[in-house]
Length: 420
Image (cartoon, rainbow, N blue to C red; front, side):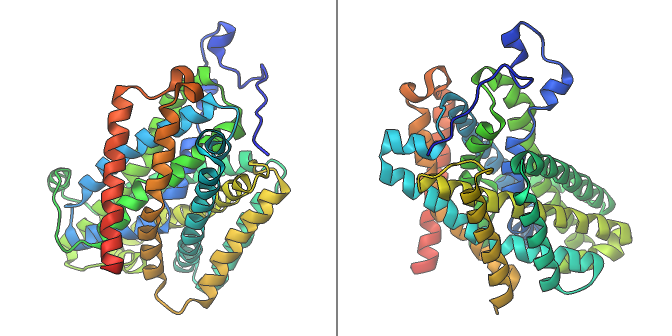
């Protein structure tokens, strides 16, 4: 079953279509899909890899976030346009235009990625709350899992989740910006970090950073969020201005702030913090208890928001791949969402390895599925019979090709490291 959106002349109809100028509340109401996607990709893996980047290499790897953000915007934009142009979901459109096996593999591929992310999200949520409030990591992990499950059980689950995630992205922004200012970084050195430099020993960490911040799987889900919101193609420019751009800029800036905080700690104390708990510990004498608490709140917001978005995306795309409803309100989708949540909690309970290592490996492995998803988005958005006037233009095509080349190169390097 494919998603069939209702294109009514409700309050969500574009004001321009009714001959009116959009008001500020109407423009702000468009915020959501890109923030949901951003909350998904900016989870414990993104935070942990950024901590390690700043702690090990100072400001040197800031350029990775900047380039990843540009490429992320390109693919996010393609998914938005595809969602606006088609009355079917992305997987359903893929089945129709590129063949059923391709669509099924795409949905199953994203679901596999969400299983990998689920572990890091579960561990990260428990770690953050245990550091902020004390108590067992496992206990807090289970509590967060139950909380997300209750959110998904709500009748209008997507709307409630979207509002919560936008608020949590705001909390992350405040927490990380405040902790950055309190750590008194070297802004001149940070500016130099925007110039590309490749540390030979960065290895899987560099791959994890790109895989997290240039996350095509999160872009894929944006098209579903567009359908959930029943947005129209006439709103494309307003969506770009109020959602796609700020949503991508927010997550990129937060990743940069984490690197800057970690680098400032390294410069001030000479301490290498490879994990969030280590960084929070050395940040307190540098920035005070307030700095550590603000940083901890940002980490919890990142983990919990990513847990909710990740599980919802996994259940939705797998259901669509199986030919069921692709809406979060569907009971079948909710069951699959619970499956992702339970998986993350169980692996957290049973895993004997380091939770941080699990997070980093999970982020790196997502790069293996990303090229397939990127090619699908590129092929569909190039087709006039699918996109109409929203198909890729010359610049969009150029940057999309650059993104595909980058993600293919990273995937090849990861395969070589794993099996070479």
